[in-house]
Length: 302
Image 1 (cartoon, rainbow, N blue to C red):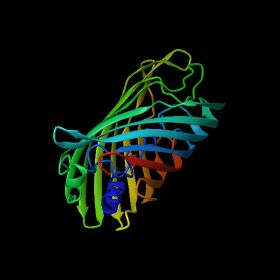
Image 2 (image 1 turned 120 degrees about the vertical axis):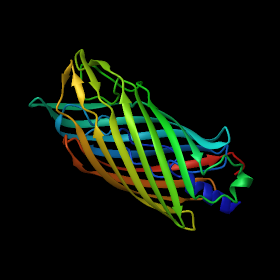
Image 3 (image 1 turned 30 degrees about the vertical axis):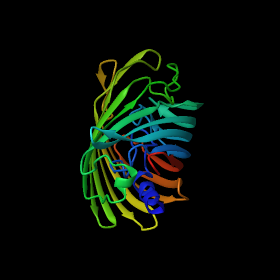
């Protein structure tokens, strides 16, 4: 049973995405016993630009956020394929300065950010398994897909330029591939984020945004103890915005790199440490991020 718990901890220690528009998330497509539940909580910190709206029309952002995250995830049986449902609710404290059209602005605010809801399915290489069946499962090649939705329920003040909520929906379909090579796992993901229009942007303006395309890659090493570590990279392109029918010069071409370390504490608890940094950003709205997540798991025969 301890071996089963370690494997479940290893494959699902990254059960939900924490950061926002430019998140880096290893192990998003992996298998786990059907019915396993995860509760996760922890803080993360950013400095620089806004992680949840990198196309905001500001320059020289010197913004800091402290974020408290609460989330839930569950491993599912989707017509014989393994899947996962997860929801993340962040609360954010934001402060700092930026420039808008040559004028300095200052902002200090706290409130809920837009929650994230996601459904994913592994349609090749990861069948839905009970806890007993999962004992003999060995990953080879997994191919999966997901749809993540950002719900516009976060703090938003249309008289302010910088907010925690975005006052618009976003939808991110994604395809992922995960290949196990002994203790090493290589992953690749490609996705696109689609945005609805914000009809009440900063004093009644109308703001829309083109699709934002992304790719991610991860090299993950799995230790026999259940600890795993990964080196992560992601690239974003597109996302040019339009303000009152005028196309803006804010095409995004952003590189980020990061690292993740996850380890089991006991049979039902695990800890994940993660950090990432912007390597280059065409719009100058890069940011640094560091965080820690505690996870508790139950159910599914564990």
